[in-house]
Amino acid sequence: TGRVRGGSSTCMFFPPPQAPPPASGLARSSWRHGKLFLAVFSAVLGNFNFGFALVFPSPVIPQLQKGDDPRLQMDIHQISWFGSIFTLGAALGGVSAMVLNDRVGRKITIMLSGVPSTVGLLVMGAAQNFWMLLWGRFLTGIAGGITAGSIPVYVSEISHPSVRGALGSCPQITAVFGSLALYAFGLVLPWRWLAVAGEIPVVIMMIFLCFMPTSPRYHIMKGNRARAVKSLEWLRGPNSDYLTEFNKIERSISSQGVQWCDLKTPLYYKPILISVVMRFLQQMTGITPILVYLEPIFHMTAISLEPKYDAALVGAVRLISVAIAASLMDKAGRKALLFTSGFLMYLAMLSMTMYTHKTPCNHGNLTVTEGLKSTYGGLAGPAFDPVTLIPLISSMVIIFGYAMGWGPITWLLMSEILPLGARGVASGLCVGVSWITAFVLTQLFMHVVDAYGLFAPFLFFCVVSVVNIIFTAKCVPETKGRTLEEIENFFRTGRTFTILDS
Image 1 (cartoon, rainbow, N blue to C red):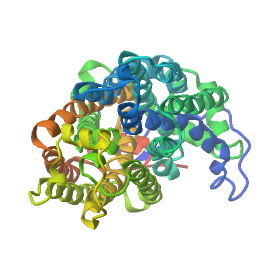
Image 2: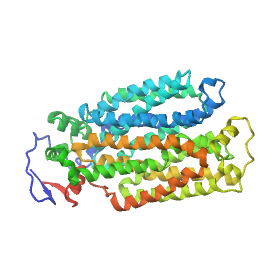
Image 3: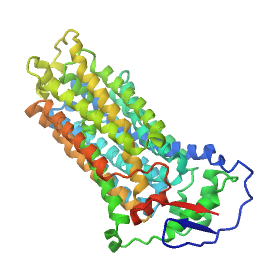
């Protein structure tokens, strides 16, 4: 039997048939079996493709504008739609994940995302006009929204509490790696072959996931106790204390029955509101339009180095910073990294605002039209000026700060604090809100730059960074070292407690 300390009552339960007792010392380390990491790797390949498809316009827009086919050359309105339609598809994908997560399971939902991803990349690779490009972007956006709403939940539910922080950052790391791969391939591949290259991780993901287990929590929610035990045994190893973990999960789920009236209780509305607002503020930092239009931004700031190499450098910095954040996630804590992230983004956005708003140097405040003319009109670039490195350094710090905290931790916290009974629906809601916000920002970004100059959006993002710091201090809980059941109890009672077993 087991007991819960910190609640008002004692909960007795009867375990399923006992497995052979673990050897001394083996139970503490047997969960490290590589099958867990293989399952996580298989799932997060979907995030690799998500990161790849998200920043697809960055190297492709310059190639299209320099190309000989007038059907594929775009004006400012078409550029805005080409950049932003992905996020509109992602919002639809997020709503789809909201339904699919609880109906067919997290793993099957991830696998289904491969269908629109494959079709969308094929359509873009074979595009003969602007509308084919647009449809391809929309379909890959749907796939991205589905993966964003299902992969973090799946990874969180199969992970051991001791490494949930590190594994929870894997979706963000692989998305960043996918973006870096796109920037790197953009240096050597024509844009059509970039679309073909994006098919490879999708196919690998779908093959690998065929052999991976469904989330034990999902099996328990559907009443399949035997399958849940089998999945947990596969993930932790036969010599681990997986039956104790199974009992904790089952006890937590058995106490939940979600109805509309339950949304009035702190257990549900507090974590849902925190998750939704965090995803909203995450996008309001401007990270999506900055990544999507990274090369055009460097062109508009007339940076002395070639923009495509600048974009690749920023992608490398982003990958390194996410890796650092993953190593610190379970040591420094979530809130400390969020504070650091918000402060770094504030400083970098302020530097970018001041640089692009200065009047002595015209290239610091180029509009979109002027930037496109200087980029694609064949004019010679300026001589090297160290001052022009400010946009590159500022962009690196923006990406570094975001990837240290507000990038991976927002995804991780969403999967940790959402109540299990409403996790599928709530995660889809979070993804939908996130990508609708991203669509509005990405659609308006180029128009605002064309009307007011590049400094205007960066000034806005600077203010948002300050809001993020305040929100972290007032509303975000620290979840480091807590099980999902303990986190749920915090929102239920407002008290921190620990589950003990004897």
